Length: 328
Ligand SMILES: Nc1ncnc2c1ncn2[C@@H]1O[C@H](COP(=O)(O)OP(=O)(O)OP(=O)(O)O)[C@@H](O)[C@H]1O
Ligand SMILES: [Mg+2]
Image 1 (cartoon, protein in one colour):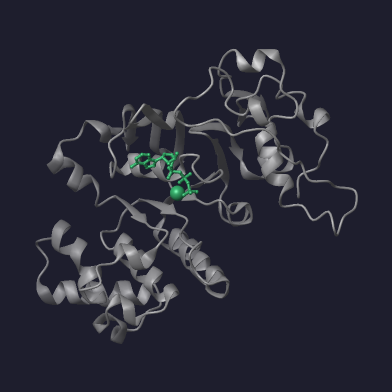
Image 2: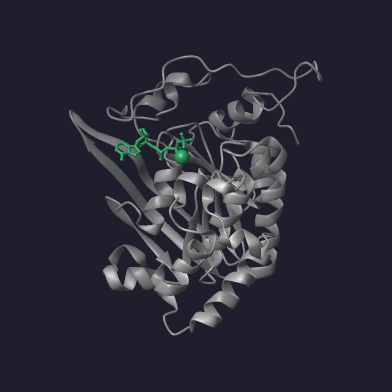
């Protein structure tokens, strides 16, 4: 496998009165061809901003994003537009992301008009029909407008639009969270099927750990703008090395079913993203923090296996210190 996307030192600060929101700080990771990297973390941890910076839907403050070796952050408008044929996004709220005045056919056709101007009208129509078929919509859906569709169908349109230009990489920003529980699994299966068939790579953003566990080979955990743990999903879920990952996973456990496990209750304040503390941002809530934790931001370093890394001074001790088992 070869590296498709390489994010290095990605940083985004939003200027606000009284300073700046540190939405994303020094985030680095890679995604290989055909791989899905899950990105998890609480609301406000910077997942969406990370995804948007990669596509330059928001401009990063610092850092580089290399796609097939090419630095996306350095591209001018025209080259960026061309690069977007290869990198697309599926949004959390399908309805809000679809133009209500356009028909489904027009929405799916739009990127083809932009990126494949050489296609004849008939060829475009044939491609749109094929795309609708790929997301299991019928041709009659093409004549409808977004409000005439169910939430699940709207998201299928958003997915058809995203794959219209035959991209290699998609940012999936909570693609199922706004949907009815009954259709979430269908949309997830659609995304995983398309990944297999089209060889897509995903950055799969979700606060739902079981979705990530099911769909991603690797996972990165964010807390207040930084990646605090990253590694193969199985290893991170079985033996998390960052106390925050452990707390997140313990929320998935069922103490009512298995009396031997207990949830980790986080206490303490979440720091403001405007005035971040000098040390580990999790220290104020961390049950095992020590003095050194508040002195400097711990680096993301290798702690176990080949690929599991955590940004915790006590990473090696965490399994013994916080003996709650992962859900396995
Ligand atoms: N345009 C903006 N201006 C100012 N602050 C912003 C802006 N966009 C995001 N933020 C802030 O940046 C931080 C990260 O937000 P982001 O939306 O990336 O988080 P998230 O992990 O996607 O959260 P959620 O799970 O709720 O979607 C938050 O503190 C948010 O309030
Ligand atoms: Mg978000």
